[in-house]
Image 1: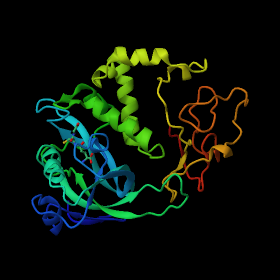
Image 2: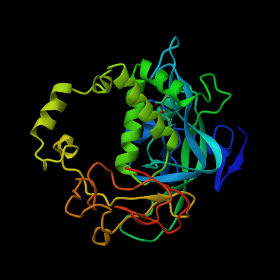
Image 3: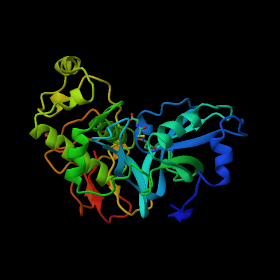
Image 4: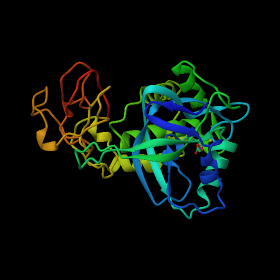
Length: 331
Ligand SMILES: N[C@@H](CCC(=O)N[C@@H](CS)C(=O)NCC(=O)O)C(=O)O
């Protein structure tokens, strides 16, 4: 993949450019701290020391499970699928950036082994946009240079596009030295829902929905695939004390941050924005029936998660979008 301007992200192939001198040469202390942007397992399993992390996005790319993997989440005989980025002029990919100390000499060699040698990724430098703070309405887009690992089609593990059901089945069937491929997908989907609820990613969440459906059809317990202790999880649910609304009673007993419910307009300039709880609109159902959800600021109508299908100007639980092209349900 040549040096190119993807969207407004200036990026340079770090494996060729002067950046390699700066970023990849671990022995020589650098002049200043540097950012590493993750959009796959790095989001939830960075594996290196960092001073701080911030969620945000890169422009000009979309995330796809088109990279094969024969180590962490697959084998040579049954390669798994992990995330990479493809160029997409309109694309925005959300993830998390990690600030590595200038004097750190371990992070890049670790990432070079994990990403490049084992994973087939290459090192690039792109513009990363920190997510506007929820507390400030400013949409200051402070861009930062960040190290980014992308698997390009020329690499030896590349699998490329396939029908989503085929990709979901492949992920459900594969595992490697770090665990199941399903865990990789589900932990990334959980990360995005919990940390960046306003992010759109049809590819990721469609794969998650398909994987959960196939697992249910095949009576595969995903908690086992996640290596979670089923008994411990059930005990936690059994203790949950919640109002007697059927779908709320499965909320595990843990403190969920109340997040303002968000609906996002596709193609709007704002990647996402948040309701002020006091401005919750009247529900499109009998207010007496509306119920609180632990992770929502606005009450929602029974049986719904808040926002409704596209074309509605007023989306319940998420406020009015500044420009309405297509409303996306997110939850
Ligand atoms: N470069 C992407 C993807 C990185 C990625 O997922 N790498 C895989 C395959 S080499 C990995 O390290 N997996 C570790 C794991 O699955 O726990 C990111 O920024 O997160």
